[in-house]
Amino acid sequence: MIPTASMADIAFLLIIFFMVTTVHELDRTSVNLPLAKSREEAEKGSAIVVLNMVSDGQYQYKFSDGANQSHLIPGPDDLYLEASRLTAVRPNQQFIIKADGDVRFEKIDELLDNLRKADVQKVLLLSQQATEGGGGT
Image 1 (spheres, rainbow, N blue to C red):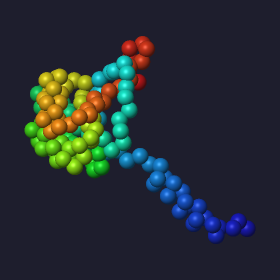
Image 2 (image 1 turned 30 degrees about the vertical axis):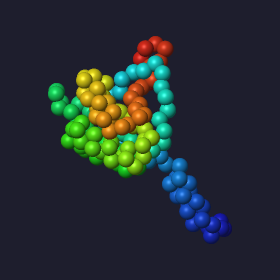
Image 3 (image 1 turned 180 degrees about the vertical axis):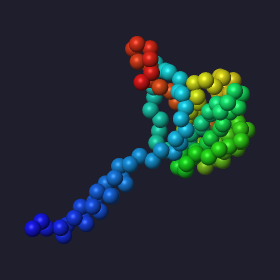
């Protein structure tokens, strides 16, 4: 006979283990990231700005404060408002721009200008690591 009295304890410990080790992803928007030769690690809890091309000339903007799921925002001017609210509370908040590789740089520059106006000091651009052969990972 196999003793089963401790099975509930083991199941409970496994559930706790998986809850603690699971990484919560704030934004699951799929974008084609540009390639970069070097990378820098982002701080945990960084705010995320997503710029995705929906169709030719149409863009989708999303924002996450680093603690909550990302949500749609109408445009770059609304990013200024969101970033201003966040930097008023946390002046050294790091921001990550997650932009599709097909997005024109003028759109990214517009985002950077709005972040600059909101007194954002730290901005990282999300990218893929380029391999020695020139392809992405």
